[in-house]
Image (cartoon, rainbow, N blue to C red; front, side):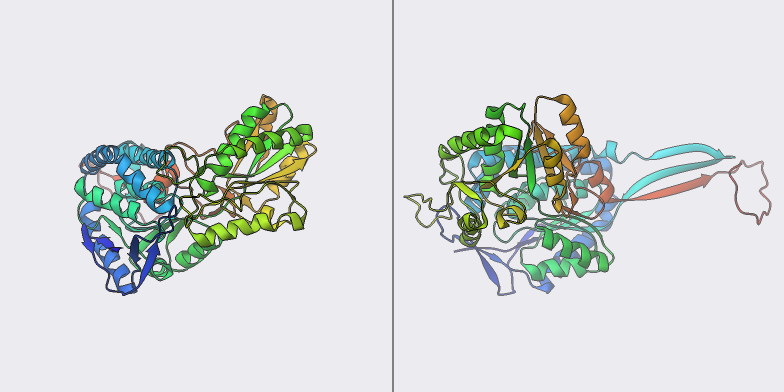
Length: 498
């Protein structure tokens, strides 16, 4: 069995901790790989490598950094299929979805290629007699990134390309459930010319996470994952004096108004709820059917759900793959099994689904629940699987109140032909990302990603301008170059701008 270790100082490092975790192929249930779970000492070694590389890398020219980034982008572009295959093998998502993940991650790499423009400072001349004031941004130091299982390539690329472009060094702690993609990204970075220690990968579990949060040489922590862990990350890291951006969970709503094209809405509900087996923080979990749209919309979604092709991610015919683990599959299924007892109507029940030639795979069919209400477990919890809930609302006002009462505020969407209603929705909904006839409003790389309320812990979103701000510190420089003919003399008064 293959054992995946760590990547420290541009070298593969075997773990000495003696602790390993299983890495499954979710389509078969087999365990082809085990991953090393780092000790505190191994985390310290990765941080030490990053700290040693920081002085030279932080002082390197923008030309040197961008030369690496362009080379890295070229290399990743040539290896898209290889990285997507790693994602499919360990996460289970279909190959086309994995390719899309790589492409969206590369958008941030492309943003990082333009870092000279993003790091341009500001200058005000002659603010006082022969006094100029400039603002510059400088890197923060060693940065840690803790990433989730559902996007093992994209979310790391949301973080480290921009961080290293800004002059920081980086320690990545990928999910132990599917670590190979993140590890491969680091190998390819070294191949593209990134100096040793600038990007390191330490695999592990909570021991590794907690050490990164407390390590005195880690200046900042980026995290994407569930709300409880995001809350823990923020509390622990800030207690140790670090800056934090921690993106949590979600319960994304899609409001369908009576004037909407219901076929279009049903297509998009299917795509957004069941893509990647629902294991997306931007998946649509709840459709809010307004007015008389409910019965027809539910029927259209159910018809489409029945036609979905579920199978191994490496089968081109598959539209949806398995879930990440057997335990997670069973947990997701429990929400469907208990829905009727809580008053919901189970329109489509996917809990009995099996793939005949993959009997040990972690497969689950899609489920559709109608007449769901707040207070039911399927509504209140982040299920993170292929379960779509439909809630009925008589009016727009009732629907918007329902959405805004949610403790999460990651994303929300409205489907309508009415421009006035759409404009009102985008202003009134309490969510960080809003779609108008777009079910998964993930912004492009040059706009930042992040939610509101319990979907975000910290002040700054990830990537885009917020990402540059997070990975740099501002500095203001005030300069006077006296005229040689002047005699300044002594003046003990408070400086004034005259």
